[in-house]
Image 1 (spheres, helix red, strand yellow):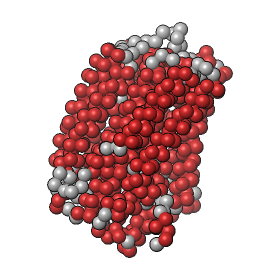
Image 2: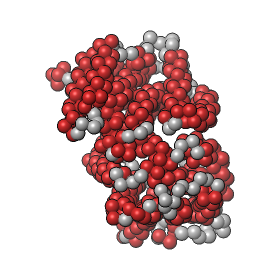
Image 3: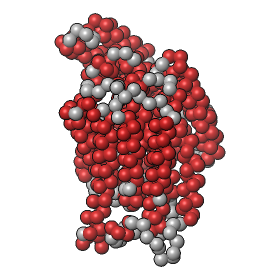
Image 4: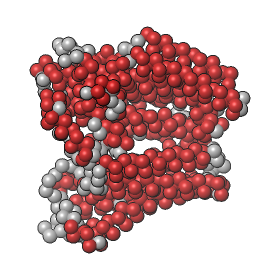
Length: 594
């Protein structure tokens, strides 16, 4: 089998439903699953039967058209929220942004995590037989726990941590109280949320969260515009409003659902009335299932360190005072902007192709002991994904360097485009390159590793994550907020190295070399270097103090260089182009003729 045929087969195997998955929370439609099964039965994919075991969409997913409609609505909600946030930033000081986005949101997220995360994992674990009355009773315990943690953490936030200058950030104490209260309010909807998740009410989750976020942004914009002197009152009330709307969406939905005549047809739901969702004594006389309670405690112990590592940057900023509130605000905004590409593009692709590799490869077998056609397919896909990640990351790194200041100025004005903002975003552009490569290498690594190898890898990751906290503290002391990004780059570089070593060992005894995807042609590398140099010179002379005509000229220069670079990639990376054509369903002329 030639390389083009293997690549085409691999792309067809992995592509059906992928674009729809990316745009719709990675849910494959029933029609797409039928296409895959049909191809497996009649086409050249018979050699890869494990790759055909996809399932349909969510319970209330409907067909591909309804999934696409939900995806379009979700993108629209996010776009509107993005524009509103950009508008809001122009009326705020970076100190207020730092206190809200780092200090108060850390209080809110920590309270929610300590009160509910372990309960969610325990109550959504794969148990076929469960007494839902006891499960719902257990979930209601998150409310008193939330009250306790909000009071305790609120005391820490007010008494032990540095308090902002009231002239710069007014009403800090009220903000702490209302953010803690908003966490408790959100916990009131926990039984409804778990019930919806357990029965795959995906549409409800998307609509409730999107509606809550966009209404919160609208309220914040109005208050910032008309009552700017309210300070933290604005964001505290908006956060409380957000959690209230979120809970009301779930309560209203289940109230209408269980009160309608159609509810009798929903045999899969464990409740028949809205009052069944409230705490009550079960027929067995037990208020909760003690096995689930013990499982909750086990999950809490496992997740506690994960929370510290996940929010590590915010904990370092909050408890060690390595940055002032203004620098915290700028860093948080740049971090959120920079991670947009990773969240919207790289993460969905990583999750989708992890499923693909897990279906094609067998964990406990060496590559030489598996079906060689399956191994060849996986190698071809991995090579193309590595090439795609490298090209996407290099494009963001090279062109992001010259357009970071302009992007920040357009998004947040002088507050972001002056000072440390441009340097932070340029550094983050390089970090995105590492994120892209790491996402692909780890999705293959985790799909191909044995259980013992995964356990060893997780232990190393734990050590690396712990060292990240120490390294980030030292680097921020040395070079300011850029130190957080440098620490992330170091951590990501170690992870990439480990994954590359595993891939090299995995394919060492086979004729396939998927790591060749990390090599680019000299012509394409020259195009990147030339484009980066031209746009850097353009930034010096055209951006960003010469007005909008010069800015538009700078954008035009970048568009021309980007087009030339992509054209060079189109001509030199023919295998990748073939893979992308198959992904997007664009037939070649030979395909049309046959």
